[in-house]
Amino acid sequence: MDYSSSRKQLHIAMFPWLAYGHIAPYLQVAKFLAQKNHHLYYVSTPKNISRLPQLPPTLCSNITFIPLSLPHVDGLPPGVESTSELPIHKVPYLKKSFDKLETQLTEFLERSPQIKLIIHDFAPHWLPPMANQLGINLVYFSILNASSNAFLGSPSEILGGSRKSPEDFTVVPTWMDYPNNIAFKLHETVSHKECEDIVSDFERCATVLLNCKILTLRTCYEFEPEALRVLSKIHQKPIIVPLGLLPPPLTSVDDKGDENWEALKKWLDSKQEKSVFYVALGSEVSLSQESMHELAFGIEKSGLPFIWVVRKPPLVEEQFAEDMIPPEFEERVSKQGMVLRGWAPQLRILAHSSVGGFLTHCGWSSVIESLGLGKPLILFPGGSADLGLIARLMHWKKVGFEIERNDVDGSFKSDLVAACIKRVMVDPEGEQLRANALAMKEIFGNVELSNKCLDEFTQSIENI
Image (cartoon, rainbow, N blue to C red; front, side):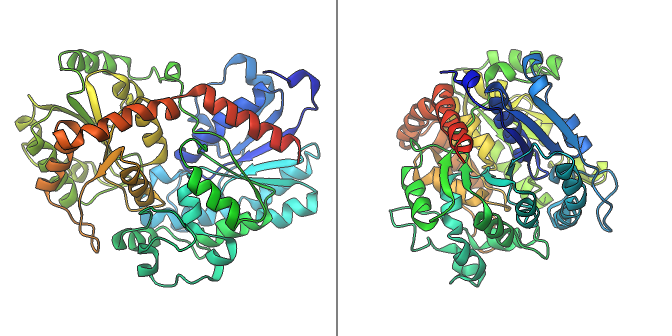
């Protein structure tokens, strides 16, 4: 249903956090709103804007990119503009620099009185007073799912609630009043501390939650009815509006590295249906050399064919990056699998009929891509943000199985990696899990459902 001709055009600023997992979904929502004839001002830094895919010509007149230059901060390497270019312990410097964008953003908004709405992320805790002064309404778009948001709790709980020690975050909160297993492991709470600034992520979230008219999330009622119910209960305001899972259109598969794809496709074509597992730990998870070696031995011990995308950790020497994979590993597994360095066409690989599972760091976008294609998950969560909570959610929903690790230090054994891969891919006890993941395609890969949620979201912001 297109009701765009009969309604007033809104001028909306979009302001995502400086991480690709935030920037990309924000652009997807901007494109949808532009199709509904609203005018979007997409605010980010020059490098992040240049990384975005080209807009379809029909939308160019409705989306304006606003580049703000990232102020210098001691400790932030020059030229860095996103989390993927940094090791986790350097992310606080990026947050400090991001906070200094306040002046430039204020100036832009003062020059643009037509903007009456900002769709923003968790990070700009300084935005509410400025928006209030300029008469601008705020909509908080959390790229997290409902379960992770529910786990955080209400703003008063976040700012001064019952949870004080890391151990307190390893139990399911009392307000999540349905059977579930959503909590952190101890080692995840410790590593999350590494990327905190003086203003914690919790404080940032609570401040924006207290001041927004609408909280919108990357989920839908069909997948998380319980968590959305809990969220509505713990937040009297803002209104909770899920905007759908935003599955990526397969047609948008990036064409970069085409020769790369030809070779990969040939290799995949030679394999049996659902026999290959794909391994990718996202652009922001950096494991120690010891963990990478243990993971490599587990992949090898599974005996199953695989494609493993290995990314050079940010800001490290080339030689160190080479040593992340055990010596002679690639020669030993040359008949079993492929190790790819750097970028890989993830969506095309997952969509291939020979791929039967995904060993993932549990980034929400990666999980959505996998389940949108009906592929089960071998869960190996990274230590930051809500990755551990996503792993628990997928394990609980029985669409993935989590690799067993030591709760305290996060260490793991290659035998358990191999066992988990086999369970998800081939073992009889993984049969139900594989069927469940396939059934999830109806929700996660359903563009119509996603667009229905986006329509409802559009109507809710038009009615503010």
